[in-house]
Image (cartoon, rainbow, N blue to C red; front, side, top):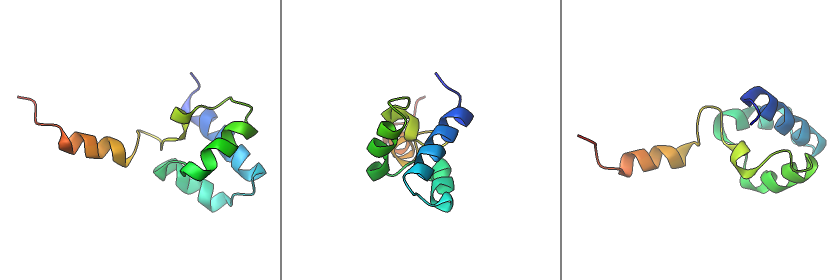
Amino acid sequence: MMDEQTRWELIEGAARALCVSPQASKKWRRRGVPHKWRLPIIQKTAGALTADDFYPIGGRGKARNIQTILEPAQS
C-alpha cells in the first residue's frame, strides 16, 4: 500500500495530464476526487490507483460522517 503523499502525487500528476487546473486538484485533497475524474485518472496511471485511493486525506469524507451519525451510541 502506498503512502498518502505518493498517492496524491500520482493523482495530481494524472490530473495535470488531463488538463485539470492545479487549484481544483488541490481541493481534492480535502474533498476527494470527483467521480467523473476517477476512471480517467486510473487509466492515466495504468491502474496504479484503485477506487479507494480517491478519498480525501484522513478519511472517506461525508459518507463516513453520515454513517457515524446514523449508528446508535455504544454504551
